[in-house]
Structures are given as structure tokens and as C-alpha cells.
Image (tube, rainbow, N blue to C red):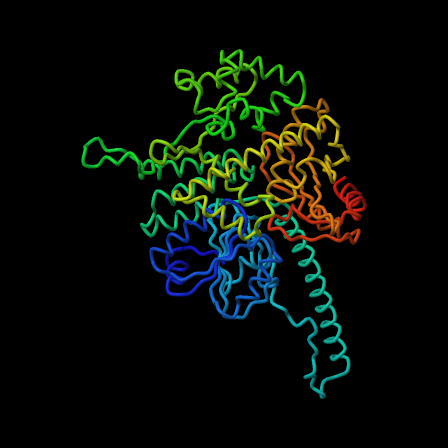
Length: 566
């Protein structure tokens, strides 16, 4: 059931208990976890933190810990499946679920005792009505065993005929109701999409408790920016949520003119910015950032010689010397940096890039360290999905979690270096896919497969990295193709996961159109295609549109998917 009062029905309940936190491996979940940890620290709440990257890990961890805990908090996992069916908990176990995945499973919505959903009601959830989905088991067979022996045989026969007619009617109604229920559930569960960021939901809880700090506000901003960077929400939703956070930023970071209230220069300060849509440009060179931002790379078509020429023309139009553009941003002439944003925006408009600037936030730690919210998202994501073999998934999770604290800026800078590697590899892979025509139209969708042995292929075996690569590849393909029909198609992408097990990761991306509502239908389609061909598939990831598949089943799986979506 949905929790209406987070303070009373959630926080005050767990405050006096030992709780277990299951946190999914994405940046928004990490930020929500940091906010909750800070609240728990304020109130001395005992908790255990367990990172989970998929359903298998969640089930294993739950079995391991279920004897010691009654209260479980799930962040960014658990809302879109029937939790009780998967975990089979005891009757006194209670789950608090704060998850952005939609649609929310109907059993979770209508379970009043064990499942409490920490989900904002103003998201248009469109949950079907209870009576359309659930029905009390009626006794279909009602035997009339109390016939009075004294009644006439003809009367008996008439009554029997009436009962038979009544039963037939009841059965027909039941069948109609079941058919209607199937249709309603199909319409409700057909598309997968994302709701309000979990970090924002947790920040609102902190605000209700009057315990919101600047650090918590920054984590909420990073959580929202993660959703925008990964294209999980529409531009409209992003702008609305930025407006909400902007009010909190003004409240926390206003400067009073009188001397008694001025903050020390080395304090953390957050500011709203209308900044450039270039990745990590303040920690890289402007040239590298232009080449590795998917927006500019796709618009210039940088994988072609003509595209490289257009980039040179763009820089010439701004009047920036190449020497300045290719050195670190921090070392550029101050005179150039002062109106750089305006110069870039003006030239970008001439080159048909109307959305070169975007609403975002930045944080300053004293004079030296300044980060944009998107910088932190890329750094944290790279730390979490790091291909380095020196640690387990949990180690990478802990590193990523630590990088969000201002006391661990060295980890954040390490994350930025990893992010640069990842972004370079992404653009190189996109260039090779487009130049060698690896993106093929399969009829109802586009398909691209990364081969074993492709440079940097191991960087894309993890779900978030592969999803981001697929989204950027689709943007670039749409800009490069002349085929109008192909511009409106979704993309299915596969990358090798494990050579020894012979498995591939497959991800489905909705079409890249301006009016796209970011709703993804591939989760259900993958399920049906695998079922009909009995392909060996594992739906282990919390996003239903990401699956693991046996490499030898790939061709029959794709054939089934084509016939299903045609």
C-alpha cells in the first residue's frame, strides 16, 4: 500500500528498530541511501547496508538476513514485481519500498500489511481499481443438498434447471471478468518507465523532519541529474523537478548582506546554473568534451571526416585558438573563459544546436573544487561499474558511495578519470558501429551487436554502461541516417557478458523522438519472445528491459522478437 505520511508511518516506525537496507546499483539509489544514512545517524538508528545489483543477489541476501530483521528498506528495487511471491517472507516481515521503477506491481499496491510503498502519489500511476483485478473466491459449485423430500418431482426438476442456468451465467460472468482483467493488466504493465527520483523522495522526508542539510540537498540534485543523464525521465519532468529543488537551494544558500551572517569561503555552497551541455568540460579540455558529449558528437557527426571539419568550423566561428581549446579548461585564458558560455551558445545556434545550455546545479567546496551535478553522476557511475578486476561489486559500490562525501574528493577525482575513459570508449564504439554499418534495421526495430574482441567491449558488459551506449548510439544513428522510417525505430543492443558461460547482455531502448515519453515496451516483449522460443534467458536486472541471454539462443530469440513486434 502507499504510505501517505512518511514521517508517522515510515520514519517513526523504523526509528526504534534495527533495519536492513537493500540498495540497488545506480547513482539515484546511492544518493537516496546517503540521505537516509545521514538521517539514521542523527537519530542513532541501527542499520545494516547490503548492496544488490539484481534479483538473485536480493533473494540470497534476504534469505541470509531474514532471521535477524523484521524491517527491510528497499531502494530502487522491488516495486515492479510481486515482492512477496519472490522473497516468500514470514508474516511479520515488513518491507518499505522506495523505488522509481514503474508500473508498480498491483499486489504491492493492494497489500496493506507487509508492503509499504514510499512513492509520491502525484506521479500519474494509473493503478487499476481493486475490484477489476481481485475478486473473492466465490463458491462456483453450490450443491443444493437440502432438497425437501416431500416436494413434487416436477418442482424439483424446475428448481434444478434454474440452478443450472444460474451456474452457467455465473461461469460466463467469471470468464468475462477474467478476460477483462487480463486486458486491464496488459495495458497497465505493458510499458516500463520511471517516476520521481528516490533521492528527492528521501530529501523531502528529511525536510519534513526539519533535518535537511546542504549535503542532503546536493545528493537529491545528483539523484535527479542521474535520471536526466540516463534519459529515464522526460525533459518536462526534469525541468519541473529542477524547479522544486531550486527553491530549496535558494533557502539553503542565500547570502545575507550583514557581516554577522556571511558564510566562510571554504563552506559548501550550491548554486543554480544555466550551464553548457558538455560532459566534464571543467575537468577536461574543451575539445575533448565537445568530441565526447553525445549531443555534440551526434549533431556534428564526428565519426566522419566531414564532421571533424564542421567541428573545426565551429571552433573558428567562436574565434577560439586551437591551442586554448586543446589544453585543460582550468589553464585557459581567463578573458576567454568569462564569456565562453555565451560564445558557445551563439555559435551552436548557427550550427543548429538549439539546446546547448541546460538547467543544472553546481557545488563549490571552497575556492578550488567546483563540480557540476552531471560531473558527479558520471564519476560515481564509472566507479560503480568499474571494469577493474581488483575488487568485487561490493567494493566498487562502497567506493562510489564514498565518492559522494565531500571528505573523499580524491575518490571523486579518480571517478572523473574513469568517466573520461568510459566516455572516450563510448564515442569510439559508436564511430566504429556507424562506420562499419553494424546498426541493422530488423523491421520493427534496429539491432546492433558488439562482437567479442571489439576494443573496450568489457566496459559495456554492465547494464548501465550498455544502456547509456545504446541511447547515445541511437541518437547518433538518427542524426546520420537518411531513412525516415529508421529514425522512428527503437534499438535492441547486445554485448558479450561472459565468455566462459557464453552469455550476452541484451538491452532495449525506446525510439529517439522529441515527443518521446521515455516509456519502454521491451521488458514484456523480451519475456514473451523468450517464452515462445524457450530461450535460456535470465531477467536478473531491476530494469526489465535488460536481460542476460545464452549466445547460441540469440538468433531464435531475435526472430521471435521480430514476429512479435511486427
